[in-house]
Length: 224
Image (tube, rainbow, N blue to C red; front, side):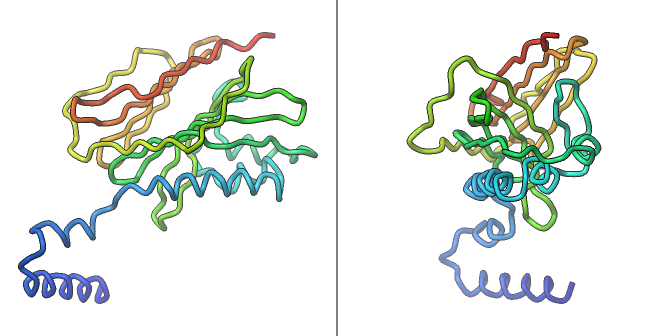
């Protein structure tokens, strides 16, 4: 607490000594901000860890304690993963897009994956910033695709507008719902799971017009 108090005192003194600074300059220094590059770096490190240490080992290390994954029914990731042995060869994946809340407390990545057997698909992962500043995933889902996603030249990055919208996003009434919202309310995700384990995921990002639907994907019920 003494260190924090001293830091605030120094900032206040510097603020009074520098009248040319905008009024909210030092307030912004203390406010959490979006760092999508850190989310991308974490996603890449996660993928690299899977190749180096094992697929399920990496998933365990990068998941929160309450993370959800689909196998295809929704399960607590840590409970499911602790019973799994790493496959001989891990799946590979690459991020193509990232959406971040204004404060950086929550982000969503989307990209492509490739299995050793030649199948390919997409993934969507929700990342939550921890108290120590690191990101861990809180929800991971995806599906097989008939054709592989084309890798973009650059990873697309979208950061939410910082002024929170008053628009309320309502779920559609499915029996099993999973959702999350950033601390500042500028990014949210909603996932509805049907009785047959089909699911719908929607990601909303704050914009000047309100909460825009930035991503909407549907996963069909698994075939027996």
